[in-house]
Length: 269
Image (cartoon, rainbow, N blue to C red; front, side, top):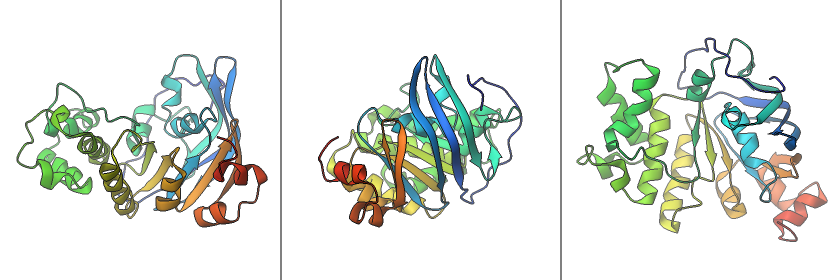
């Protein structure tokens, strides 16, 4: 990872359905003269959900976006350190950022279906882009992704309707299906339920529990109850530094650092 990340191109390995481990080593990143995260090192386990918590502005989303090179898309952004996917540095000169973002998919805070596309075309968009045309099994892969996102039964008769015609919770699951369609190995979720109602939030959380059987999931959340409910591991960030990283039950019941205890008990944040 260079001091100022660039869009260097190369060739990444083919995706499979087996979950992969991803890790950061001494990751430091920021914008212009501002350092958002500093020397963050953590190893994320495959087939588990890792939550990243901390107060606003602590660097949670910056760290998440460093894990699939989305951070470098922001003007003035820079990063250094290493991010390893199955031991391979995604910031190596031969790594292709487009392929990296397929292998390490991202679900954003607010549902963002493509407004001019149908439900079907929203899911198929990534397939058409990454396959340089129409995959021969396009319909099958779209259906499979919608089933994985627990949305197929709700939309199977309306695939030609606009994606924006769906409810907020359905739109978020549509965006998850769009990520799943290109067969990633890791899924990054940046507060995926923060804009949803409680019923839709529950559906997304139940979906995460199901998806971790096949994928590695990293979740940024402001909701500590949500982190406690769905995650296996939790990382606590404060002022850009990783303060504590542990099994979720242990971090919430027996935090090792006083700052962690102060945050989860509401003394600040």
